[in-house]
Image 1: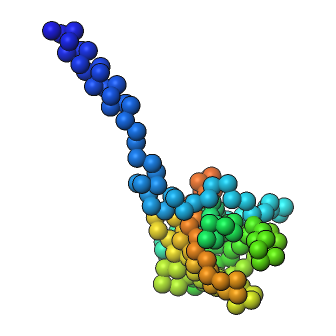
Image 2: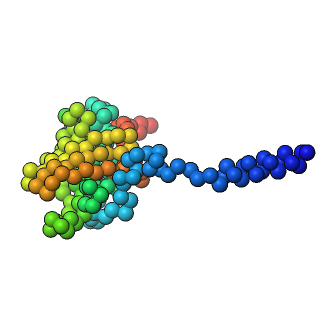
Image 3: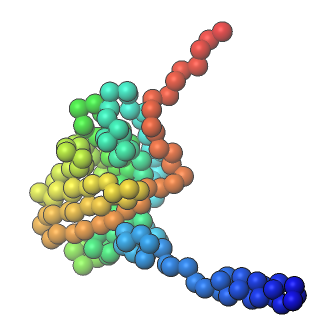
Length: 174
């Protein structure tokens, strides 16, 4: 009887282990919009994240970092490096794009200024294009409107680049 009980438990555990888990896209609706192997450009100069001072709001501070794995409308690769966030809501960004062959656009990177307003990061570029991003959990969702049309994007924060929650504390001298 005891052997039967153990056998029953082993069969039950094996059956449970064989069941597949839900794919990440079923659990996380934004994951299906990511393009993990999207390539923009290689940066030849190093970039640095600046620690925001204590007067920068947590909402603004949350934009700081490297956002990747996104492509406008799933086709035009794009990365966004938010390198500095200031108390007035202004930001410094590196705006990276892969090639868009249909529009004869080469891969490139721009240094730009942006502004955080009402929880959204707004970046205007030459040619009357405007990109508006909002954070949703660990994702950055964006909409770009300009002469090449309207585009949507979902990006994920780069995990190897540390978030900067507070300004660093200078060590005390003894």
